[in-house]
Image (cartoon, rainbow, N blue to C red):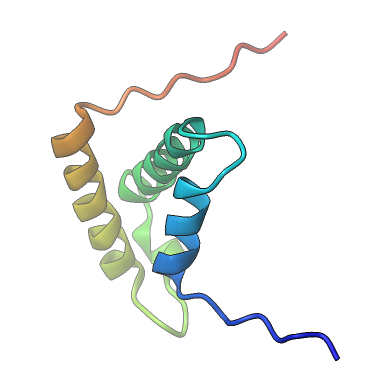
Length: 87
């Protein structure tokens, strides 16, 4: 009988992803960049009501994104998204 895998918390999952990737420390760069891209998009979206759903108010969701963006800027400096070149 297969052994059941313990469900991980979000913190455990992200920790495992960032500490035990076969790509080494580069995965941390990718995860932080993805986090920055996501929170900046939400924080600067002109219509927070589009994030409204049954769990929370879109303005509240945007406030969380702005706070996370602020903390990321304090740690890593200003956000400067580099977009891939298109042909």
